[in-house]
Length: 126
Image 1 (cartoon, rainbow, N blue to C red):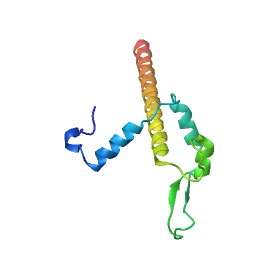
Image 2: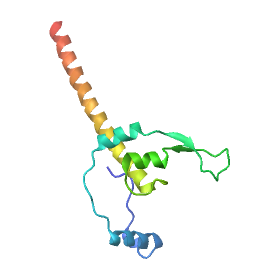
Image 3: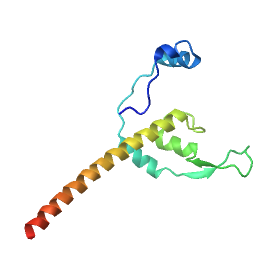
Image 4: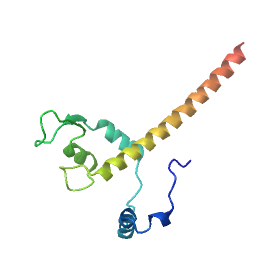
């Protein structure tokens, strides 16, 4: 199921967005290895989440999320423990969504099996 319609690439040719995309594609990213979504989900579940603000922001400003140092200790993606790169946050979120989806599918199948077994036992006893 496609959620977003893809625009014609011809319409994008020569636009700044297309040029940036081509630069990204040419620099390339190499897959490093598979990811265990359930392990990532467990790591995220254990990650301390709090409200915080940057020291230079006014007192009333609040952000919600993990501290970069906790993120770095949990995932160790890069050497910088003072920021959380957006691409890493999005990747972790997507892996967790996939793991949760698989878990919901597994639990739904289990509930269906239990209902089927219960209906067989109930109709057999009558």
